Image 1 (cartoon, rainbow, N blue to C red):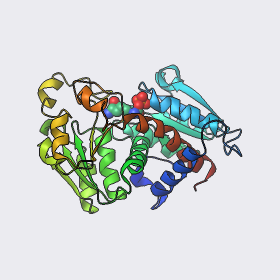
Image 2: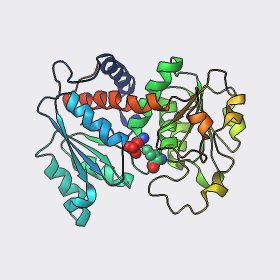
Image 3: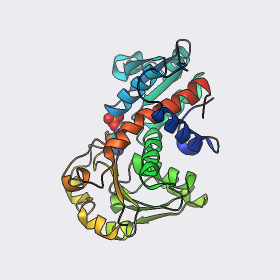
Image 4: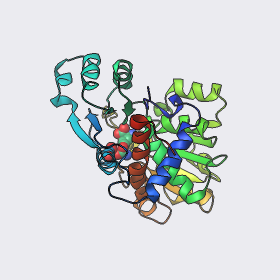
Length: 304
Ligand code: CP
Ligand code: NVA
C-alpha cells in the first residue's frame, strides 16, 4: 500500500523520485495536466486542525491532475462523535481513491493507515510533516543545488517540522544542526533513529553555533497547533529568533526557510522573512507541485 506516513517510511529511492516528478509537474505549468492522470479519482482531505496551504494545494493538485477532492472537517464527521477510526477508514475505502489526513495525534494517522485499503497521506501530525519537507527540499535544491553534504540549521521549537527535517537529513544525506531550547527538544525516538542510522545531526543550544557556515536557516512558529499549553513562549524562545545576527555567521548565499504561517517579531524578524534571503513563497508554491507528485504516486503508481 502506498501510504505516505513519513519520508523514512517510503521505499528507498521514492523520496528522490517524488522530487523529480514534482519538478516535471512544475515545468508542465498550471491548469489541467495533459492526459489527466487522476481522471475520475477522488481524494478525501480530513482536517482535525486548521490549514491554508495543505488544504488548497492538495485540492488544486487533484483538480489539475483531472480528479477531485472532498474537504472534511473531522468535527463534522461521525468520527467527531465517536465512530472509530478503523470503521471510518474501511468505509472511506469503498468510495474513494486516497485519504489525506491532518491529525492532532500521530496515532490517528497510523490507525487510519492500518485499516485503510486505499493510500493514506500524512498532511501533518503532532510528530511530523513530510509533504512540507519534500517541498522544502525541492525549494532548497532550486536555489542552491543538491542538498547532499550541505549544512542546514534549524533554530527554534523542536516540533513536527524539526522532526521531519531529522528524517530528511538521513534520507538526503545533509548535515543538520538544530538549536532548540532544552525544554523543547525534537522527538527522542526520531533523534535515536537518526543517530542509529548514521545521520549527521547535532542538537545544540546556541543558534550562532548552529548557523555558522550554514547554507540554510530554518525556523517555525514557537507555538504549534495543539501546543497552546506553552504559556510563556517569549521566555523560552527569546534567544531563538532568526535575525540578521544569524545570517552574519552563515554562508554568504544562505537562504531563509519557513513552512508558514509565520509570526514576524517572534521566531523571525520581518527584515529576514520579507528580505532577499527568504524563499518562503517558493516553498509555499512548491507544496502544489509536490502534492501532485505524491498523489500520482499514491493513487496511480506513477513516478517520473
Ligand atoms: N505549511 C503548512 O502546512 O501550512 P497550512 O497549515 O496552512 O496547511
Ligand atoms: N509546527 C506548525 C506547522 C504548521 C504548518 C504546527 O504544527 O502548527
